[in-house]
Each structure stands twice: as C-alpha cells, then as structure tokens.
Image 1: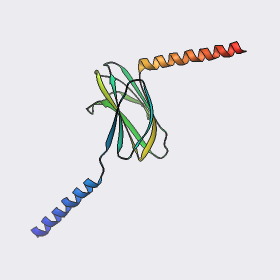
Image 2: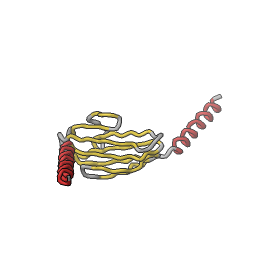
Image 3: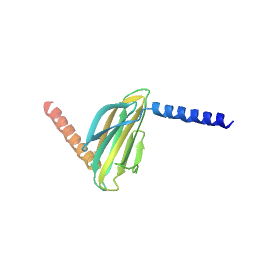
Image 4: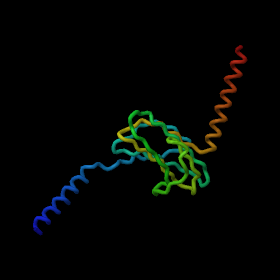
Amino acid sequence: MKRLTLMFTGLLIFTATLVAQDEPLATKRVHHVTLPLQVSNTVGGTYVDSYIVQVKKGANLHVHVENESEHSKFSFDTVLAGTEKRFGRDLSENSWSGVAPSTGDYEIRLIAFPSARYNLRVHLARDCEEELNVNRQSRRQSRSRRVSDE
C-alpha cells in the first residue's frame, strides 16, 4: 500500500510540474515616456504593456484608456514603479486619477484578454489646463475667421 501511495504521489507531482511548465509567462513590454502622453497600441496574450513616467510629489496624474476592440476584457492599473503600491482612484471604468505620494517613477500597466487595441492618454492636471486653453484659443480663432469671412 505504501508503494502505491508513493507512486501515486510521484505521478501527481510530475503532472503538476508539466502543467505549470506549459503555461507561458507574461512578457512585459516597458516603455519609458514623458508626459503628456497619447499612444495607440495592441496588447494581449502573454504581453503586458508598461509605461513608466516620472512624476513629482503632489502632481495630479490622470490616465484615460479606451478599448477599441470588441469581445475583449481589458484592465489597467497605476503603481509606484518597482512596487505594487497603488494610489489614486478610478473615475470610471476607463479613467483614473491620483496625486503622487512621492517623487519618482510610476508605472501604468495595461493587460487584455484575448487581445485589445487601445488608446492611452496620460497627463498631469496642469497639462490638461494648458490643453484646454489651447483648444479654447483655437475655437476663438476659428469663430473670428468665420465672422470675418461673413
């Protein structure tokens, strides 16, 4: 009986080892970027897209991701690079915002199953205000051109 138990245990360990070896490990594609950032890419399968940004303490970071693929599950998170320390809060299913607790590198990770095409926009609150001002100025200029053309 002991022999049978020993053989059975050996078979279980051997098959568990084979199953674990069959599963591919995730491959992280790391991109060091500057803010503001707007990028489109595809992620999925065994890949994780990781964007590393330098942020100063107290900066208000905004992340917005759009999944352009149907029938795919998509997720993202933002952490202090090299750790699993999360901060901030989700504003919606595809938006996140947070104040950096310290100066350093922050990592934005994107994962999809089976795969997804995405648009990622990352900016600081001051960048957002500057972008809004530029958009307002261009709208005013286009309005004044229309008025002068009439």
